Image (cartoon, rainbow, N blue to C red; front, side, top):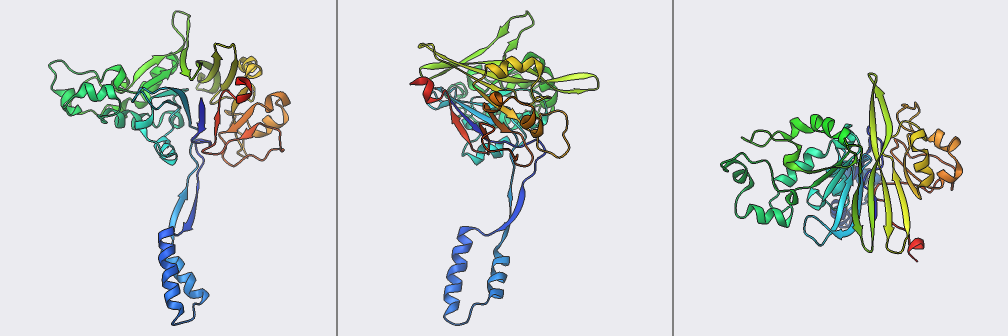
Length: 356
């Protein structure tokens, strides 16, 4: 399994603008200056004027905290690529995916931890672009035949309710997140011309995992080479607003194989405290922790602050943590944490030492 940080920053982090010139423009400028040098002396002022004329305003963004998880098993899309699961889909997820050469076409499923915009804002992009992509999966191509999808939707004698399950992306979600998710993204998805009762189910194959209404806990297992990863939602308090709780359901990823080898990854997503009491045993049990880490001057109270992680977290837990979800890059003592994630960083699990 491969986990890539396609975005590591906080919800409201902003990038910077730089004045740059492209390689192509720089090449043409260099050629002109070489030609001009045979006829006249090139001055600093001349060069500065040329650079100013050719420069462009380039924005270097700070993507939100999105992760891409890839399992070594046949994808839902084509049966050959790895199965790709997004852990949350922030409003900038289409740009974050493009940054690593991917798009919605390359994603099989999404896990949603909670219905804040920086975690669900990309659902509309994922839903609409896969719905209107006739080749999203091999099953969808077969199902459509030669029909345009709008005709397939509208011309049936009975109103159409969406592609079959194997022709649309998966969504994995806790039941308590599903209804607020539907309310949040519903208006944007209700945009299929002429079709009544368009819903989240129109676009996605929904899998409710975690504690069910009958009290059972449902997990989901992904094959990964010779082993498998079982994902389980993990409750953490994120925000208490208007006397109501907003939970964030992080993920426990548990590896096992036929040789009895195990490895545990904890991705709490957004947590209110440095070490929530209800998660303490999960932190101790985990081999690796993806830890949200606030670096703003004024702590918000809805994320662990870097000062808490440095001064209050036990050293044995610090050594497990990969930090992310910050505004400015955190300044920490060398070697205190396992690492500080940058956009594009990835890790392969389970590590080689447990497979030897």
